[in-house]
Image (cartoon, rainbow, N blue to C red; front, side, top):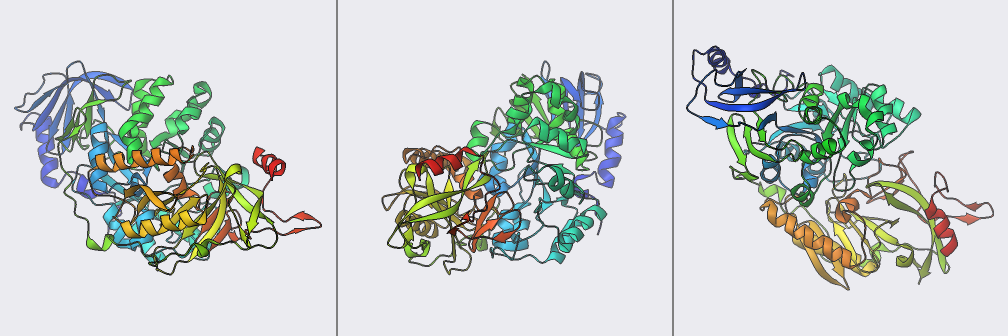
Length: 612
């Protein structure tokens, strides 16, 4: 099997012969995009040219009017640029199937995504991964192979288990562009062999550095990891670029790193040639209102980056880094005719989008439908007992109070450890809404046995009620947070009944829901309906006191065990650095509290000590 990337996207023998004939005027073009200012990404110039297209590919870039054609798109006074590439995305977290993502993103100029299907891999294994890289729409999908499913079998069960041999074989698949993001704290032989196999097959290794520095970062990059989408400050960006890493600058639903990174343009300027853009984890509502990669480009230009460079970061630079530049990323002969016509470069609103030589969208409206079929085996994947007893959520402790190891959310899905003293009623530790310390539970939804891990989290500010999702990263279990156990239990049951998605519960009643029946993670319904349902759910959660940005997305990541300081699975609380289970209820003895907080300098510690 060839390891060349997507050979079916290259011209066939016949197409290549015809391209050459069109380029020298011996055969007619199928399409000419005439008279626009074409971005030459290699030089950073905008040149008045015609884009001459034969079939799916560009035959030539010529002076205006050099060739004629029956099919002409007039781009006079407009700019012609390549379509955008999202360099790292989990499609499942958009809440949409690939075909529905295409309907919302292609009209905004993002026509290629590099996606790690770790969510559906945990639900449906290799078949789920196949589903996530397949669509009949104009969206081009390249796979970043999920490296381990489950992430750590010693700490979580998850749903599917993918053998290591299958992961290595998939790296050699022409549809795979990279090894997906791996656990930065895994130094084992299996992970090392996986990294080497990616290098041997000529594939990049996608990085999730968890914002580490010094030894932690050095050890991760030494494995051959070549990019990072966690860098969120100028210092973090420069540290990584100086070590040879590509920066995938992230703007998702939980955080927008473009704001901080572009705030000091003079310092970060040396890194701009080693940067691409990614949405990583972005709900459909935010894509629809804020934008996909077009948002990054707007942010870059507004910060003072020259438009030609901003567009190059979104197109050619990721194509070059991921070894796709022979296929796409530039408006040059032999490449796919994936282009967009834009009037205002700073506004980044495509008037027309062409994919593979065909008009795919105009004025924000797709010229295609989503006809992708959803197989039956991707439905009815949420398995929880008919009666989910709130007693399953109980954390036992003696006395009137207990000290627990808790976690506080910050900068999206990052978590700092702290300890809190909570009330105990009838031998059960209670949430403390006044201090915003709420119970959180990860409930198995794969095996139907109600296996449940419980912790405490700060940051959701719920005064009452509960919210829950069935898309816990990465094991795709149910995760719920709430002010009382009864509402958490109702939320778990509601997700079972609707086949997955999001719910809000208040006083024992479901007050808002987003139904995501495909793998319990996505909807194949029109994206407009899914975005509208999420908007309502956000508002209802706000009415319960929730002030965290994108609460359902953040909730999906509280349990993630590879982001310091803590994680939570259906089996228990995890110390992310040591990759081991730790106690939830802490021992208090003559030597003090036996906590696992890396330090006690954060304001949350003082708050708990003053008010507990």
